[in-house]
Image 1 (cartoon, rainbow, N blue to C red):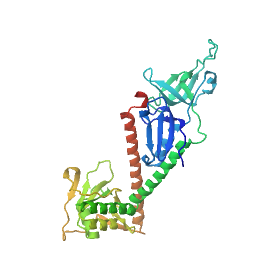
Image 2: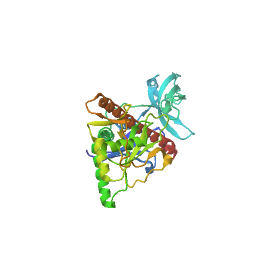
Image 3: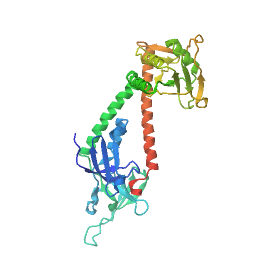
Image 4: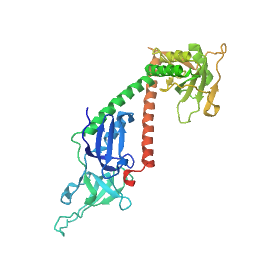
Length: 369
């Protein structure tokens, strides 16, 4: 779809959460937001690839709306209790910003006509809905109040950009589903990348696979023994320290050859089984699992570590086992694995929200520049 001409809209800025009049233009996978009355260096450019979920994109869409209309003196009767409005507030006498509010109460006064024109003298008690005064009541006059306009149809520029962003999110969700729940295709991409790097740089020293959702009391030696028992691979295992509030631990398996990596990935990818603990907790392989030239981690960041298992020293572990497809154990393990993937996805969204909130505090708003 071709780019549309600039649209005049209201935009709720991420920095200070205030509403600003803006000009919006979509071009390809970018949406440019220009603040009316401010320097061009405050323009914001949003990339379609920045969004990780449809929920995040929906929140971004809600930051755009038609320009609110100033309430006129003769329109005072429109400002009734319970009406959502957009109102201005001056923080230091000249720094005027607009935030959403709801009219809590109206103190009506007889309008003046002293100057030949109708002048509203009523007082409006507002409750701020967001921004620094969220939840606080404040008195305002009619000149501070604007009527919020309904969205009859989505703006063309915003709609074009949202389409691009939805396509990006769809691809990310598909890749995330493959890599976290059925990770074989995602691993294949990473392994092929490692092959290319090895060809360019003469081979890798070590390969690292990160594992999540381990039992907190699982020992590295148990992991090493189990891997050797199932695949005959000699590896080095680690279990990372975890918070007392976390219900699971994370770990790592270090391999010295690319061949071992391929064998172990094939073992993990096997759709006919899932690795579980004796309590039924399934392993979850992290999405980004492969690194080159890994040196052995130091003990300062590890709970425990286990040296490479030598042939002949392998014991048979009863703390880990395989749940086979078709069994009740497998069904429960798959549900738990999917639940962990959903939790991880939710955690990613929380991290994104944290970054957004930090940005609001650390970066100045257009009005404060």
